Length: 332
Ligand SMILES: C[S@@+](CC[C@H](N)C(=O)[O-])C[C@H]1O[C@@H](n2cnc3c(N)ncnc32)[C@H](O)[C@@H]1O
Image (cartoon, rainbow, N blue to C red; front, side, top):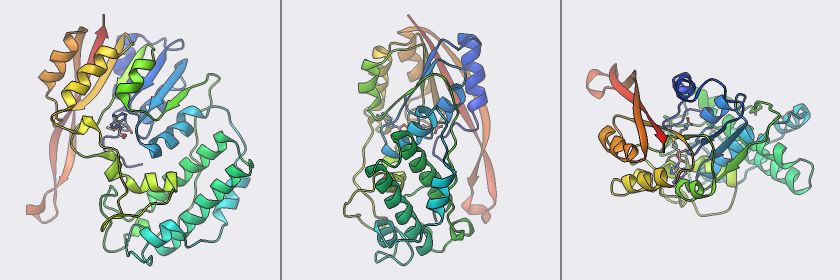
């Protein structure tokens, strides 16, 4: 999934830095990914640690992590997948409110894909209600639908707006592909809570923090993923069909530093790693100042090229240099 702030490309850098500081022997360690998003960081650690604790305040992220992290024992899914993929479309909530020919004219999906998403989502819920599937299978299918729907979404990247014309990838017929997870013997934990509340009730060895770094609220940018995942009834608002969404203090200039300080103070983990970007709401110095109050602080920096659309040069792309910081605290 193309996700704002995804650590997909930085996952080796994070893994290497963590093992450099904590040692390569992780098999007895508990690793917590407190702002898990797509779950990619926890997924990388899952085969190597005793337990992963994954958390995110958004429900779509909970559904993804409940599958990728929470699921650890394999099951047969071919028949379920085949059944879902052979369903006829239904003109349901997604078709009506978020597809090309729905009454609201919001071009997030083609009409065919919108109706197919409805049919699949309704079927998954019916299977759950009639106990044809387990909780594990339910979240596996839900994660599979979210990932597959995201692939055919007619957006530039996030769901804050849809494109006027259907783009090539969105014109393709949706195929529900399995959201495969890593099997492990050990059991993992997944939460959907505000980080600053959850941190008071958990403990472990390695705490990885990847909070939002700017004012863009995830609940607004990914509202349609929540709508597919929850499949509840509400009145979609405005041009983009927004739902009410969670507003995180980590996205507010006046609140972020306080939230950060409180989180570090309450963390019951000896090793804390924070990913943050040089364009974030908190400066590198501000982060350092908070962390060094609680133990030994160090910093790893990774430079990478980010391509930004440059409107002045006729859609040529210009590389801009961005630094990703990994702040490290060995807590006293
Ligand atoms: C930078 S993203 C994490 C990306 C993730 N590491 C990945 O690679 O996919 C930040 C995440 O923090 C979540 N978030 C924002 N405020 C939160 C809060 N107060 N508690 C828990 N999660 C929060 C957002 O929903 C978002 O998924």
